[in-house]
Image 1: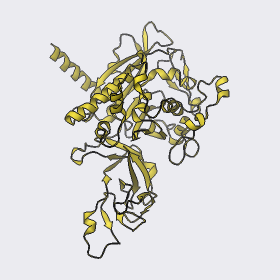
Image 2 (image 1 turned 120 degrees about the vertical axis):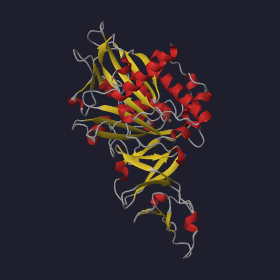
Image 3 (image 1 turned 90 degrees about the horizontal axis):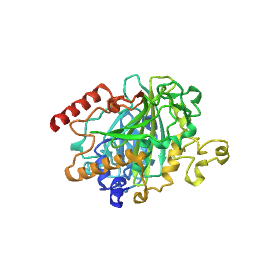
Image 4 (image 1 turned 90 degrees about the vertical axis):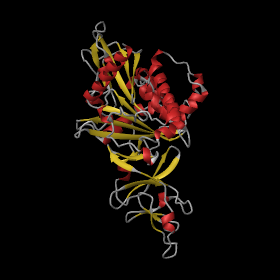
Length: 445
């Protein structure tokens, strides 16, 4: 249970809120590359941390993310002309480049130096992994940009789905580190059991239905958490359906503060979930599948998740299935065996998270043993926000910072004698972990 003060510190990200100010020191996935793919194309509204911005790709292919309001009379630049390496306001024709510099000011007299005194707020950008990234923190503290977690290898293929969620960022993210809920909420998408298999399998027959197979009937995982400099890894330990006396079935999720959760993989793909704060009450959710298989493509992935543009989400990525229409829940389908009657795993999650309220009153919760990872997440991020207030230090950006693409999740069946902490780790992270343990043991001695 959180106090009201802690809940405010965790969830609020607008303005001077410590959590939002800390997050701004990270590179932020602002929007997908496909949304601004065309040079001189239509400007796109972007809202981050309560700020209304506009993204555009100029004639030379550079991407700008700037304040939506023209500094002249505050008209919206989302309606502007994107042409000849700049975004021109329709009201008086002022034109700005991707860095916010005024390149034309036709309303001012010839010879005027007024343009040199005006600057449109802009943020630096990078392109990688299907996203346009931006940095919204102090310029002097901008960290080196690193490849995102889903770019493991140069030949990795990936697909991205995008959905807007009407809830605060923390409430949305908590679903990705709650292993216990999958046995209930997603039970119609998961086939438990698995016979002699030693790990999870994604059935090709389930490419459109979203059916996955899991080698366990256990609905009550034991949760264990391992702290890391970037957040934490946690193991959900279940009894496997075969040889439960000798083995454990383990799913390991990595939380990479502040935006990413690396989800345990299966035979077809591994996955990353991304939660970007729009404002105090809204979040943009991205679900990314990665793999070296031709099956991992955007159209298949969005169909699988019921996140297809023009069908499941509108042109602004808002859900067709929403609270106003009860997420199109099909009660007849439920009578025939479907657990939720709601199509699409993300829609099932959002139905639960949004109905809590945009910012749930966490003082009313009754948490149990399966909620240990949730408790740890809240502790980690609240402590991080307080430390940022006191020292300016930012979680995940210290001297021991790891390349995000060296981080891994894990899923499989292992002997009970197996220490789970290094399972699935890359060589880089494993070496860092061993060095840290050795240092702790020497200090204790």
